[in-house]
Image 1 (spheres, rainbow, N blue to C red):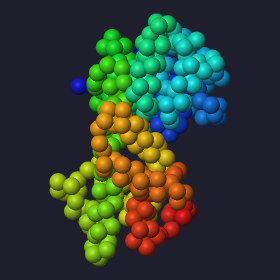
Image 2: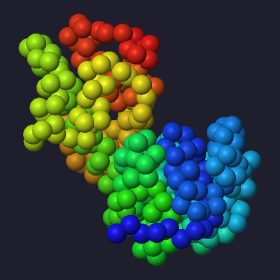
Image 3: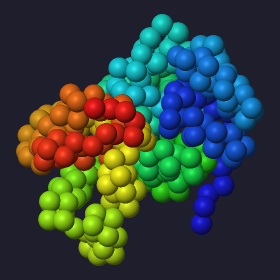
Image 4: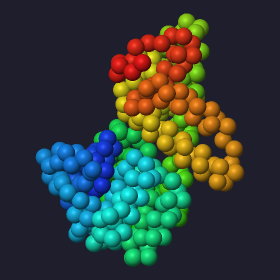
Length: 306
């Protein structure tokens, strides 16, 4: 049974590909949303949906029950918390901050402790489901932090996702998300290798994909990205650069805990190859073009990348 969101006031910081859809869905769920982005035009563009644009972080936080951040990387979230005019000095009235970005777990624990000292709860709640899940409000949300803070945030999560899970203490949400990204990256690489092998053997690749989707090799990535790989469509959904950032965080966590991840290390080199060939702003499916190059079968990308 879907939990109905209780209308409240949200300061939303980070109006990118994901954040835009998440903010829109919060407004659709009845929440009063004030948006802030370093690109003022990104927040202004939401005015037609009844979302107010803020000129500063402090303005977005003023009077809010919760501030939600959705930003590219750890330093971006730290700047919002610790920077001049940031949330540490200007917390929301509801004393709750929720970060839904994918960032380093150790940074989460540090922000959690620092915000707690000024009476502000912090929940790390990264998401899985990509731009489509953000648009359809079907994200999987994995939250770390204190149980009372999670309970307070849950009604807001209900406007953005369908699988909402409290996975542990501060930083646990990010750890679960990094495990998710590890699996996604390796799965994408496995799909690339299967398509490369099938192509070399002369198999029809769309037929190969259809058959694989009907058996035990089926996966979300094969379903959503397989056709784009075959067709050479590298248009951005979740970008190569962002996956590389996530894989970096995975490896940092693994090194800190002495966990060997050889397959993760291998797929990271493939993503680095893609970025080195100018594909960083393309979607994850552009990883197949690494195999195009290795096999000497480079095709023009529909986005114009080399």
